[in-house]
Amino acid sequence: MTIESHPLAGILFDRDGTLVVDVPYNGDPSAVRPMPTARAAVTLARERGLRLGVVSNQSGIGRGLLDRERVDRVNTRVDELLGPFDVWRICPHTERDGCRCRKPAPGLVLDAARALGTAPERLAVIGDIGADVAAAEATGARAVLVPTPATRPEEIQAAPEVAADLLTAVTRLVDRAVVAR
Image (cartoon, rainbow, N blue to C red; front, side, top):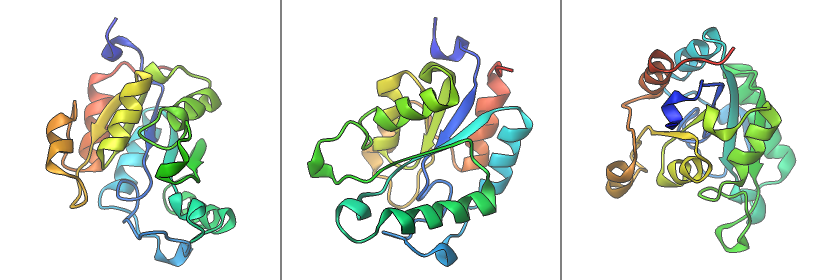
């Protein structure tokens, strides 16, 4: 059975560069700005009955540049602007920590799927870099890359699916999927 034949139960979004403009190590809720088409994309997904979550690497915590409380305040602002999301999962580690959660490792996606009560194969992951795609692929979730200036050309070439913007990504997913109810 291909992943497209599984009913789509939800979408997991990367936060920075996907849902909101990437402000490196942002701990300031007033600096949160939705990406173009983010509101429309999230609204469409909700209207189709999908569960929604956010999976985000936040190495600023591990680097000592942020604390969890500041990250949570930024996430609360994202919820106010675009949410509420059904699940939030963040990785506070740096690349050197070797954790199971930091994308491209599958931990964030697996934990979010568990919290949503669904198999990862019934989820899509939308992000702006190769690590987002790799985390999705490692779990059997569908992966869609929405490139930004931070996306490397080789990440675009390697992605199983690329969309010009977030609304296009969500529209494609819901238009071709059987949505789980």
